[in-house]
Amino acid sequence: MELTLWTYEGPPHVGAMRIATAMEGVHYVLHAPQGDTYADLLFTMIERRDRRPPVTYTTFQARDLGGDTAEMVKTSVREAYDRFKPQVMLVGESCTAELIQDQPGGLAKSMGLPIPVVSLELPAYSKKENWGASETLYHLVRTLLLPVVPAPNTPRPKRDPNIRPKANIIGPTALGFRCRDDIREVIKLLAEIGVDVNVVAPMGSTPDDLLRIPNADFNICLYPEIALTTCTWLSRSFGQPIIKTVPIGVGATRDFITEIGKVADIDVSQALARSHADTLGNWDAARVSSAAEVGASRLPWYSRSVDSTYLTGKRVFIFGDATHVLAAARMATEELGFTLVGIGTYSREFAREVREVAKKHGIEAVISDDYLAVETKIAEAAPELVLGTQMERHIAKRLGIPCAVISAPIHVQDVPARYSPQMGWEGANVIFDSWIHPLMMGLEEHLIGMFKEDFEFAEGHMSHLHTAPSQESRRDLPSESVATDHAIASTNNSNQAVLTPIAQAIEGITWSADGEAELKKIPFFVRGKIKRNTEKFASDRGITSITVETLYDAKAQIGQ
Ligand code: SF4
Image 1 (cartoon, rainbow, N blue to C red):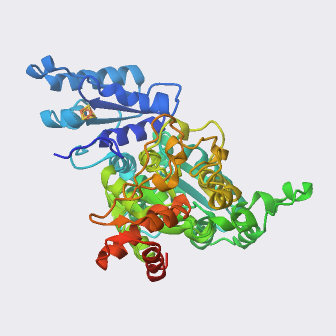
Image 2: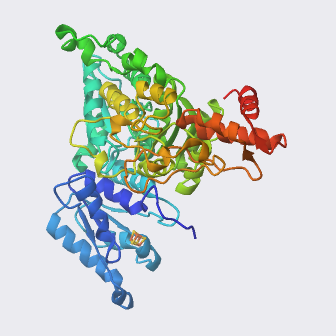
Image 3: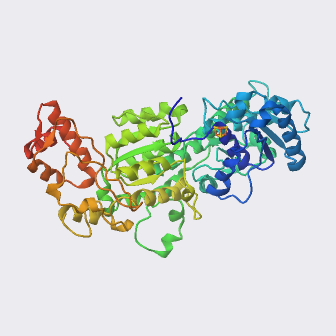
């Protein structure tokens, strides 16, 4: 048993639903108790789809358990086939159905339907949503393509150099973070370098499309959590190379183009040169409509421009699925000049890659699906910005730290109407805006540091977010006990900027009045970190009362 309030991922059958819903011509019969139809809402509300997912639930009830639940499976399969006439049927079970062991996949296969039936074995008590999606895609593709796999060691015929190379884009699903717009952006990138798209799967594809997958020269593994198992099988079975770079960020997009150039044996130097062409801030009609503007991102200039100077060294904590976390870590450190103070993922299958990045930055990765563990690590690291999932948005709000969402799980606001990719050149533009937005603007940060007594622009206030300082911030500073400093819960106004990153006082350590006053002079967004470092410094040396001198000794020693 594990006490759980929030889960980062749903059960694996939700992953299977994401594949079925992304496609046309596929139907999913799910052996599940009455009530599991809640999962429909993920698609009709969060993703705002205009039709129900292609799922038939057996919806057994308590009274059915005494009868023949296996017969319910057969009836559902028959009815679903008659009504929807799919080209392929997926059959599987949810958590509760797994316990009664009706073997729905086997039952459906024995019914002699005139279409392929894919039996899904998704262990709901040990695996999760993304794994379920990955397995479903793999079994679906494998079932359809197994009959046409060439004999082992058959060399792949060389591409005719007069024909443009063709790629499959594998991985985008229903309910994926910004998949809809990422696909558009990636197709645009490919067109620019002279690569045609053969099949995009599973998003928007049919079983017939999956049968055409072997016609492409290579596969782009766009979301490894979903696509890597399938791409690996395709590479083994059909000799199709895998493009592994995920083009999130300017550097990664350039690497993506370079990797395709090598694999497809095409000249991508022009596209790369264009991507370096600067899109400076000066408005100029010719430039705006030029290829340079189209084939490049504004992020490099924006992050080099003088207004971004104050971003340098901002302490950032990153958490989410592995793909987006790895991409965000690279962008944050290489393209925006942030300092990485925490990184982690709930995608255990990709823990190794995340650990490697953490090691490079001298920190330890958080590999966990326990949001309380993540919350503790964020509080300890006291970052100035959190990049995470919907859960981290809640955590950051409680701790009073600015936050932007970079990965699923997401709420409805992260399936926006406007074009908002994360990938490619435009993706980098979108990311620049959405990460910078929650931070206090440079001038305000400077002024609040200088004039702390302003009645309106008090500490923690971010006027560009229309937040008023909380009552707590208006207290007289000297009378506020620093030793009991804690995150101020933003109870009344959900957008309320909260003031001090959470910091646990070390037992037996107090702050003298002068030490406390000096601590208060430190800008609020780094104060939590400095407070804790100083307390640790004092505790290590047996100092019980922290004075101004202790504060500065600690600062000199730790170099904070
Ligand atoms: S069967 Fe699984 S998904 Fe359905 S309600 Fe129970 S735990 Fe949730």
